[in-house]
Image (cartoon, rainbow, N blue to C red; front, top):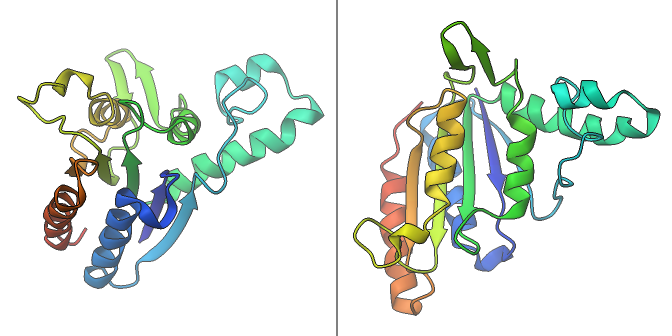
Length: 206
């Protein structure tokens, strides 16, 4: 079984989402024997913003742009991201909220995995997600409080976006672990982290 760990926080050792993804991966390693871990740090090696020259080879936009030799490195890098995702049984994603939504590095990664014929398709019955067999766990960190009933709940475009992305490709119920209010002071940060780590410790085997 392969677990793909995706981190996107730019704050390194101070990152709450990285603390959570590390805890999630360790928990799953403990309860799933023989788990193979593949890691991709999007802050350390960010994918380029998507263009017709560097979309995955299987994407219709790539076919329309042609196969000039200078496109090969960008397409190979995108193909590697897509293949890595397709091979994974479990995907653990660290997603901090930046300016009410996901980091641009994570958006660039998502642009590589939403590929017709690979992760979704349209047919006579409409949309079909092709990644339905994957388990997706998303560790979210938010500086303020954006949950239901909060004054700025309508500003939340991270969890809602990621739920939509994965529902689109067939993962209708990703597991979400949230630490929020982490910028409201040291006590609030620790309380949010402790609560999220309790959820992490309760994760069950795949």
